[in-house]
Length: 125
Image (tube, rainbow, N blue to C red; front, side):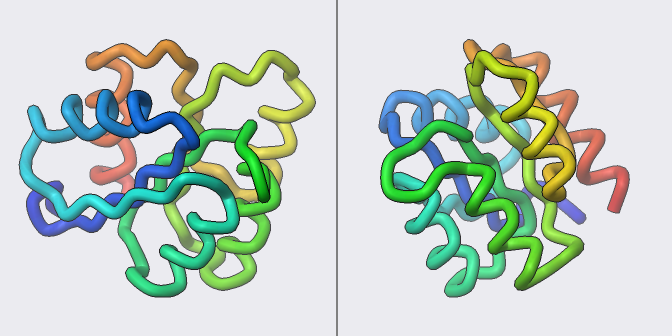
């Protein structure tokens, strides 16, 4: 997988968080970005665009990240999902990883952590 030919779905109810993540990823290359504002929107955009990598917050309105993870994994058990959240409970993180999330980035995000995680995920494929 090459970052420049990748489709990346960024899901967060905060427009600022989505922009920050996009700005960091753009330092690595120029993928196609798709944005979703909550878990329900994420699942619909996943079905429509089949992105290569999904960044997903956990705590969001309408449908939380853990529910979205389970629904996406039902569609594609090989989906690459990176949790990007400030979630405070270990049980929510554990649930996300058990449901199929690949990696976890703690908010506030750092440029180094995002680049390291994307590099790891791309090389893993």
